[in-house]
Image 1: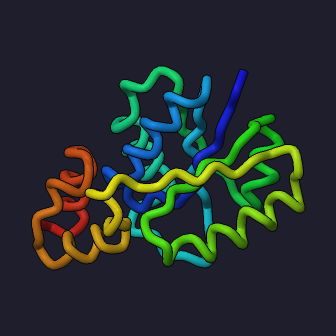
Image 2: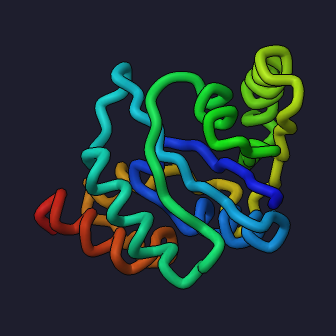
Image 3: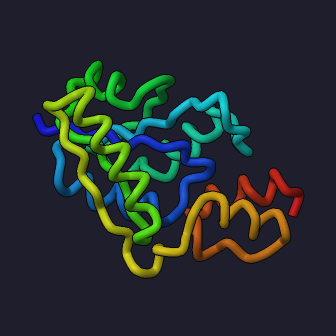
Length: 159
């Protein structure tokens, strides 16, 4: 079975993330969307909230599951016996950091490939940070995130 891990903070999940997940699910037998626990970041949503939102948004994809991990992505990937790590690229500015990370992961775990997937043009500007900023200022985020995420963001920001 061809298994891929799509790691990220998903704080919150955006339509860009969903697009990458949907496309990866067509390429692999199973995709694990792995929510990272990064103690250096202050997420808006708790780990449990992020996982619940992802499960809600991705429930229609039979070959996609949601999990969480702490530590190195390659260690998690090795534990899951995955063959690939999926990374989304929005713009050329993402590439340098992602390339460095992919080379480091390849050195640490040579048998796993990093697969870069380009964002669809309509999502190339979109990030979780942009979504949170727009939502916090009362802007319309309907076109940026799934409905369940829009509702949760409105609750968080009392909009």
